[in-house]
Length: 132
Image (tube, helix red, strand yellow):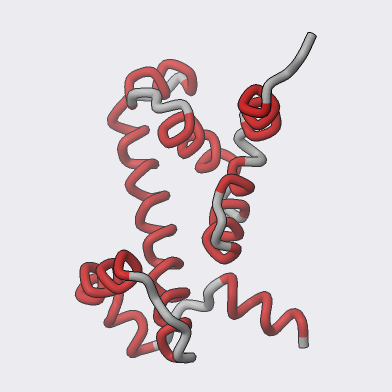
């Protein structure tokens, strides 16, 4: 039996604990990797498997309203970390693509106050400190 490249990749990455491997950006991959297991499961079913909130709710024995709340929590956490990562890159004169610049513009009103008072420590900053 011959396995195609696509089947091989499906086999490798069809695991909720390995989905961070699908993300090219190391900082974003690390943010996904560090999510709580329950958040990884909901993100996996939603983003990778494309399951509806109702289907995820049945799998987890929860309400679809609760799944929506969990998804919003996950997105807020990931967006906040991404905002911090992109601000750090911008501060260090690293080039940003158009979509990253648009993201910063769209979320500056949401997260800028946090950045001015005390920026949340991103995974990139933590890794840099760990290396020292």
